[in-house]
Amino acid sequence: MEKFSAYRDPGTGIHPFLPPTSPNPPTALHTALIPLRALVAVLRVVFLLAVGIVWSAVRLVSLLLIPIWPLYILLATSLDASLAQSCFLILGFHISSEIVALNRSKAKDISHARWRPKRGDLIVSNWISWIEIIWFAAKYRATFVLPLAAAPAAPAAATSSPISSTGRRTGTGSAAISLPPPVSSQPRAPILGFRRVSLFQMLSAVGSTPPFPGSEGEPLEEIRKRARGPLVVFPECTTSNGRAVLRFAEVFGGSVVPPKEYHVWLVCVKCEPPTNFQPSLALSTPTSLRTVLLTLLSSLSLQPVHLRLLNPAESPSSQTFVVSQYVTPGMRDPLSECCAALIAQVGRMRRTGMGWEDKVGFLEFYRGREGKKRQ
Image (cartoon, rainbow, N blue to C red; front, side):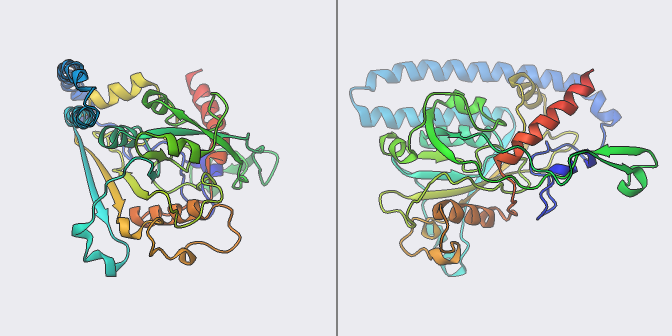
């Protein structure tokens, strides 16, 4: 952990990018359960294939209903949601969602609240994994976008050379170790536009940072107007390890709060810390599909995921929303600031001053460390 101290958020002391690991080393029991884990993985593959075949057959038959478009959309949405729920169940996921009220005066009406994003609405969330992507796609047939950003500035450091310190000062023993120079939060890099992406393109972007390769971007508002469903936006522009909320990029520009043409739905995604028997679901660094699948298929424990949904009456799009509680005069993106503050409150998480620009430098350092380990 100490070797990554340069990328610890100075305001909170949190490592927002470091992949979560179990605090305890593997035990003999963990090794003894390897044959059972292999058997469970094989059984899960069989069940997933069976579910996929049944879904494909029913989905193919449902194409006959395309002339009756509303009925087809209703059936397709139900089938996709059922497929996702079945796959999550087979993999041992327990996904719980609850509508949360921040204001006590509005908590009494929470039982009547309905979280139903519609076409042209915005779903704004923190980003920790691929799970929320699948959930939004299956439940709401959502549209996804990725940002196109200018290259961030070179990492700023307090010194130009690594810090040499003895183990007595760092708590690691008597041997001298070399630490990277402390990194201050990088200035914001402007978001140049967005591009609409498919579900698989969105999944492949998990752990990566802008600028994402692709064609020229276009304004978010134009994509929102053409979207067939709600538009999902991850203002962090990259995944974190779920321990805190990253600095939101200025993705909404000068949007007026509250917006008049659409609703904003806020959600905070949280997962449990990893153990020897429960892998981490947060993917703060790019991870191969093979590694993710092997980890999930062979897991012997439940995988709890919590989605905390903000009460629509307290959303930034609510006409009773008090902007001055979250925004100060002169802010270039008031909607982004409101969303960041509310998501942190909903998830009871701390906000960091580090953004995706800081993660660019972290990934370079992290890959260098991992490369040396393999040599």
